[in-house]
Length: 421
Image (cartoon, rainbow, N blue to C red; front, side):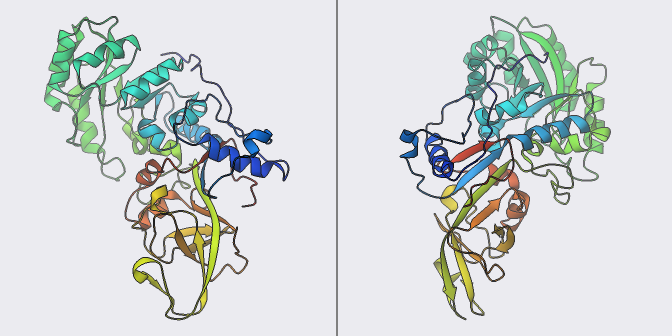
């Protein structure tokens, strides 16, 4: 696929130049993010607003900022690590919770996209996106093949039943097919010894235009996790003259070892690390989503006072607790324990008390300047989502994907916004 114009409007710059604009900005963030979220081409927040929009009010001071310049930089980093390879940006799960139509303008330099949802792929074609779109789980029903063919979607084939459906299909145009080998993940893919046979069957079909070979590395984030899988894949592909797609985000970061003609970066594009011990910053990645809020209450605790449900936090000394407008109904992990990192007034502190549906509480012992209205970062700029996830016993992928629909979203081309929360 050539570097044709994706056909998506560019935009997303967010900036404030005067005090009068701030209420309108809050208003527009809340108004623009209420479901259903339509595929607006620009997703831009202006620095002024009409009186009609200014009449609306944001109900809570919580929002997620999506930084498109960071996404562009992370995509450039993927290209830098995998020189010469085609790059399919992975945008499954609504672009890992960031919003597919929001981030699309920042992915203009990708050679195509990869996802699992057919409806999202069809919507991209309806938006006149013209580059390759790969369905990473392929298709599930023979009746879907007509839509897939009409919209020129590429498919992964990983199962004999999919081969049989293609053998029986009569399509308006043949498909680009990525034949997947199971090299140790043991989820999807043909046994390595069957790859040649499957390719021979597919190569003769009128429903197949071109073949590619692919696998998914189960342990690319481990020092010794790729050698065996790569050896297995290389043996399976021997004699097959088709391009290969191997590297996920972890594989991209060690591309010199993994190789391949087509790479599929996912979590790295959004500024989180695919590794347990190498931080995103160490990898040269920037956070794309920053979850921001502010303090809406402060309590003065005395020794032995407790906070929140179940008295999960009890003060051992007199100090202040800040109440933040964010909870598990917004996508923050309910199981995040005391000590989970949070930033208040640009300074690091920690959770103190159980996360509830709409609120969480933080220790203000070392932040005497904190007051009601002070800015809070839950994850993103200054608070790596991977650190929050590790404290909560999960991964950054889950937190990003779990952002709730009730959280307003603002898209920018810069970092921290001058909102004076």
